[in-house]
Image (cartoon, rainbow, N blue to C red; front, side, top):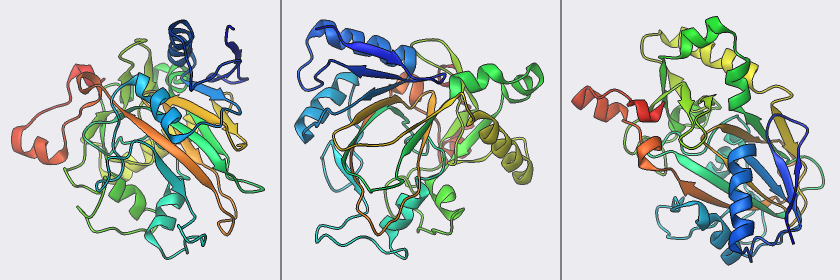
Length: 301
């Protein structure tokens, strides 16, 4: 059976039904991959994927990014619930990390190698809230006027998870864990050219914190203005999760954020992340740049 692809009422996204992600033949996989490049966000309702099935589907897109330094697991739980069934408290590190996810971001922009794609599936959802929202950075760039494009076309920003968490009052010792300045802050152009489609998009989000050539106040104002402009309808889509839903998105041109919910209620999601191609997603870090004077290459634009 041919998959049914229905565009979402936004500049990004499509819902795909009549497909089993755990058992894709080559023709169906090719159609899914084409839709991924066209829509940048694909919603697969009611898939009920197992860990192995989600890993198998996500692995078609490339190598995995391992999200836990002490584990080689390719699928990880994103949850506010502990193994004993209790939930994390506001003063705990994991709680603060989850709240940080409520800011617009793209996965792993703070790592030397940014992510290509992510797959998120729902296992347990709260009775209200807890949606995930995405924003189309291709359409956002297209909507900028000529003067704004001219101002940002040659600018870059450092990205840091330490800095973005610090903005919400969550201070983590640098070098203490995944993404917290373990290898320096990557420098990434504000305007990125997609390595497959060739479309330009904004590459911004909460992890961007310093722009060479601008003072910090000016950089923060510019970043905030771009983010506020970009993440508006019709460039956004919010998904009201049901257990079993799975969603795939392209981190190279899409931002996302979690929406608030009652954190006394359980929310359990399964996440897999695909590493970017070093030819297009590898960036110099602040530490590297100080040592070598390296500037971001055209392949990263």
